[in-house]
Length: 259
Ligand SMILES: [Fe+2]
Image (cartoon, rainbow, N blue to C red; front, side, top):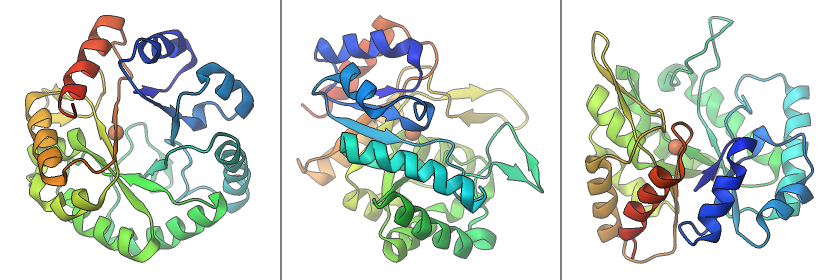
């Protein structure tokens, strides 16, 4: 399961203590102001993984990024996470900050991003797994091919989010099968619920506030059957509508797939 904000800590610790989750994926950039020891004390011997949302490693000035990377590196050394993961996102468009973070333009930004990924991994002294984007626009059709290049040319990994792949399929017709070879080689996975936004056109959004959808569970079951029992991690993400019963029941449904 994931942990993104301090107020959810008692609930996350309770669900892990009761055996509904085996490890915790920490949104580490929300906790860079505390010391790694405090995180370790909060979780005891529970294995940890790191997720990063706002490194902005593609756009951030080098000096700022070096400071953040040095801080994350300290957490990596102290807590030995099972994986370190981040996102490929745009935080500004035409020089303006945007609230809804858009997908990359893989054709236009591809070379730059590959270079930034190599540098970022060098700064962290650690491989980074990047999460597939829940595409909305047609540019998302180039995403699986870009990830093939990313993995081959930078040594980075894929953190495959089943729900995001379903969203991209629903919104812009990227078949989930386009990810098959990458999924076969991936070790780390996400899943979550998605929401329908009744705009014009209607789209599906990755909001992490509902139960995992049936089509996502079907995709997970198919991937599980194709991959066999090779060791992996699957993180159920919940960030909104966080309540004990709902989170617990979703964890039970997901764990059933891997029993
Ligand atoms: Fe995710």
